[in-house]
Structures are given as C-alpha cells and as structure tokens.
Length: 583
Image 1: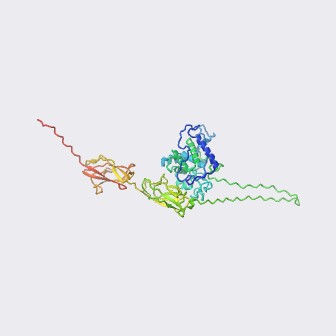
Image 2 (image 1 turned 60 degrees about the horizontal axis):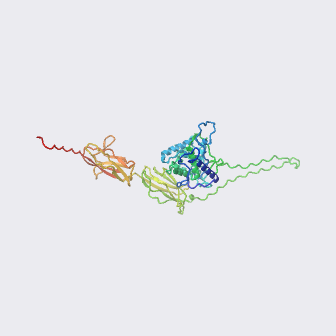
C-alpha cells in the first residue's frame, strides 16, 4: 500500500482484539524456548517485540483493511508422501505461493541485493506482506505477465472508518476521482505509487496491478531509509512504515517466520485466500469487491379470483388486489467531509533554505525546508508535501529515491531528506508541492560542482635523480585532500614545465612515455583513487643534464611542484698507493 500521513483509526475492535489475542498465542507458541518443533531455536530478526518509532510520514497503508488470518501452527513443509488427489494439511496449503507471485518476490529480492545490499531484504518478507494485503494477489489470479485479473482495490479513503485522502490520480489507478483507494496486490495508494512505482518486469510501464512492479516497489519502499532487514530494529521499522500498527507488525512477522520455515510453488489461481479482515471482512468480502445490495423483498402472489355468490347472476368475481409497489431505494447521500488541513493550505513558502551546493559524490550539508501556510500566512501542520528532483542529474535523496513525501510538523515545516550528489555536475531542480491540492509550490535550485582538492603533498621524500638517458628509480606519488579530508576521484594534470615562472611545457629534459613508447611531457585525465592517492607513470631522462620541474595541478586549485635532477654520476676517486716504496 502507499504512504500517507495519519494514524490508522482503531476500527473493527472486536475482530482486531480477537486477532491480537490469536497473534499473541501464536507468537508465544513459536518463540524461543517454546515447546514443539521450534524448541531450542535461537532468536533471529523477526521476533515480535514492541514497535519502535517509525520515520516521519506515518504508515504506508492508507488505513485500508488487511487480512488477519494467522498462519497454521504446524510446519509448512509439504509431506514427501503427498501426491495428487491426496488431501494436504492446512500447513501445506497455506505454504503454497502461486508460481508467478513467488517469482516476482524472488526477482525483487535479487534486484534489491544489487541496488541496496545493506538492506538485506528477504523475499519471505514480501510474501508475508503480500499474504496480509491481498492473499497473494487473490490466490495468484494473474496473467502470464504478472498483472492481476481485475483490479484489487481497498475501500475508498473517505474518512469513514479509514483515513481521509482526497483523489490524487484523477482515478487513473483506482477508478475513483473523488477519493483515493489502495491498488494492487501490495495495496499502494496512488499518491505513493507516483514516486515509489517501479518497472519490475521491464515492459516500460509502472503498474501497481502488476505483481512484478508492485513487489519491486514494495522492496524499495521498505529499504528506503537505510533500514537493515537482518536486524530487529530495521525489520520492525520497515514493516511499521507499511502499516503503523503493532497488530499488523506481529501478524507480518508471524507469516515471515512461517515462510522462512518452508514454502512451495503452486499453479497460478490455486492459492488459498484468507477470509478475515481487520474491518470485520470475515464475511467473504475482499479488497476491491463491494457487497451486492440486498434485493427488495418480493411480494407474495395473490390467489386466483373466486366467484362471488352474493353478486347478482352468481358469476361475479372479487376485485383483484393491486400488488404493492416495492419502494425505490434512495441512494444514501455521502456526508460532506469537514475541511482537512490540506484543504486550508493556500501556498508553500521557503523556510530559510541555505545555498544548496556540493561536490560530485558528496552529500549536501544543507537540507530543504518548506512551510505550508494559509492565505493569511498561518502555518498548517499535518500536510503532506512531496519533494521531486528533476533535471539532467543523478542526484537523489538519501536512500536513492528522487521523490520524497514528508508531513509538515506542528509549525507547518516539512524538512526534505538530505540530498546526495551523483557524478554529474551542473544544476538541478527540487520542487515542493502539496499532495492532493494544486496550490503554489516552491522550486529550489541545487548545484553539483566537480570534485576538488585544495592540497597536494608527496607521499615520500626521496630525492628524484637519474643519469642522462636513464630512468628515474622512484615514481612520483602524491596525496590530495580537501579541507583536510581525502579528495577522491579528483581530476589532475601533470606537466614538465620550463621554470617556476614559466608553466609552459618543456621541450627537453625528463619525460613520460605514451602507449607507443614516444616521449610526452604532459599527462591529462588523471584521477586520484578512493584514498586520494595518485601515482604517476615512470619518468625517463634524455641526454640533457640539469634541474627540471614537474608541476601537478587538480580541480579546485591544488598545485604541487616537484624537483627532478638529471646528472652524470660522479666518477669514483683513485685508490691510494700503498705506503712505502720498492727497493
């Protein structure tokens, strides 16, 4: 599901309370030290514990309902003796994940390992969330490309028992142009899909109804704050960012542990579908399906008319009663929702953001601050502000995203995540806009400059000398720093110059060799390594003796001049004569 701001309303209290008790019982039965198959198991990341604080921005469910069915207590591993036609245990059936859905989870895990290796996202976490959110895409009702057969929709988020989220996509994803609804097998709301959506099956589209796209998007969403899923804190924080509820956390953790113990693939469309939901959805209602209204009661047909013996002629009939007309049901008039904080925002204002400039590959030290205000200039809290990076750049927010949504605090301030520069230099733009309301936003310009150094020093102090026509025994190595920190990947140039006051290239004396072995006296395109070090190629001397200068310069203005001497070695002195003379 997609991110929004606000806490899930406590609804369906009776069902939730029962589910919470069942979750607690299951957690106890599967905890370290419990009797049964898990006895003696050491505690791993994923055990149910009190919920840690989540990141600013609320949960990621849009307050939509979820399935509360618990995993079976018995092992999910299918029995080796099971055969076609043989009844399977509930554990075996529940452990079956539709083939295409399972493939999408595993593919997302593989891509996240490469894109965000520190996240350590297990595919079983996606399976656990997919089970709770949509029953694995309603038992795997997907086509060959992974797109669901029919849309899976949560109820409209109109503030009646759910969060109030006015339409943000003009009904493009959910078909609702008045309110948003959670969409797809992982239940993203449209405003979050707008920035979190991914193309997981490489078809050129980002479709929340496609299990490959949704699974990859969910993986990036869970990993967006540098959380490490191999730790309890990271795992619990990520799950709570999807739905900020302790009951939801416990439920997902139980399914995660269940799938970690074993699972298997089943044909698409044959997976089991849960039946109990957090909004009392235990009557068979599933996300996206509206219960059919009751038909009006049928009137009972009257009996055939009978002769009326009291009527003259004896052949008269009693008048046929007119059947009552069923009342025309009057469609309920939806209540007019009270104005929200978003409704009263008139504009956004910059909140004193300082100069946004940094070198390539570095984090920006300043962060963007934006304030939501009414027409009268009063600050407005609890308003979602979306920050979007545009332009020809590879800069991102911390976590690798180019879009971030943040809720304003009590003072109306939304502080964007820190910006991280890529390797492309130049300007790019960050736009701040109110989610769900077309009001005046704010544009910020950020600049990425080339990597630079302000100091160069030699790493050794051995004099650099050689004889005419020979080669220098030692190679020149320097270290670059910027404000006393290592200056890595900084461009440098090395030139053999004529003199300290004449920086033109010398036409005699020491030289480098190019790939063909020809003399060159200027080297360009040099880069310091990740430790700020730069080792120059070997130097050679022609037949000219004397003292020569090598000048090294970098982007940012760092300069170092190195002295080179070419001289004929001194001849050894004559050996002294033996004392005394021959007789």
